[in-house]
Length: 271
Image 1 (cartoon, rainbow, N blue to C red):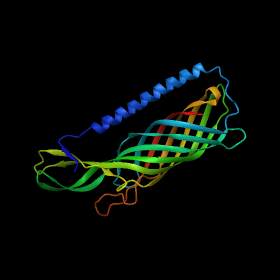
Image 2 (cartoon, rainbow, N blue to C red):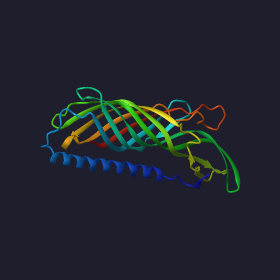
Image 3 (spheres, rainbow, N blue to C red):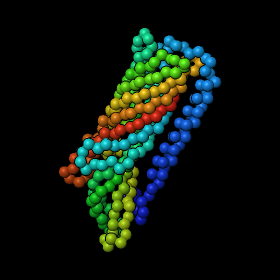
Image 4 (cartoon, rainbow, N blue to C red):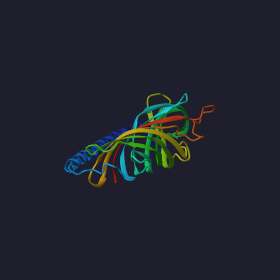
C-alpha cells in the first residue's frame, strides 16, 4: 500500500481542474492571436485552387469518460487529457476538396472507474483482508496514427470549412494506475482512505493496441501563401481500453470491458 490517511486526498481532482483551466486559457489566447493575425493579413488574396499536400502541427485538450459495457464496472467521473502531433493531408481529386488524412500524435488519456476488489495488507500490526468497492485511476499515453478523410470547401473570403471521418490506431507506450478504497477499523471509530502504489498498466489493465473511430468539424483561415490556422472539434470513440487479463481479483468476475468516449478541441497550423 502506498499511503494511509484519515481523509480523502482531493489533490488529483484539483490538479485536473487546474489543467482544464490552463487548456481553456491557452485556447483563448491562441484564438485571439489567430484572429488578430488574420485581420492584419485579410487583404492578402488566398490561393483559391488549394494545395496538393498540407503539413501541419496541432495541439489541444481532450475530455474523456469511460462507458463500461459489463455489470460491476462503473464510471466515476469525466477527466481531462491531451493530444498533440503532426498532420499530413494528401489531395485525392482534381477539385482539391477531398483529402486523405494521416499523421503521428501523442495522446494522454486519464480515466476513473469503480469496481469490487480484494486487498490483503498490514495496518498497525494488524493483518487486514478487505473486499469491497474501490476506485481505479488510469493514466495512459498512446502513440496514435490517424487514417481518415477530410472534405475541404474552396476558400471563400479566406475561410475554409472542413469535415472529417476516420480511425485512430492507438499504441500504448507508457502509463500507470492505482486504486483508492475506504477501510474502517475493527471498532468502527476510525476510517481510512487507502491509496495503493502506482503500477505500470502495461502489466495490468491497458491493452497494447486500441482502435478508435472519430468524426469532426473544422474551420481554417487562409493567410499569406496559403499558410493556414485552424481549429477542430472532434468526437472520438475508443472501442475498448482493457487487456484480456484486466479483471477484479475476486473469483468468477468477468473481464473488464469499456468504451472510452472523447471530445477533442484542437488548434494548429497548416503549410
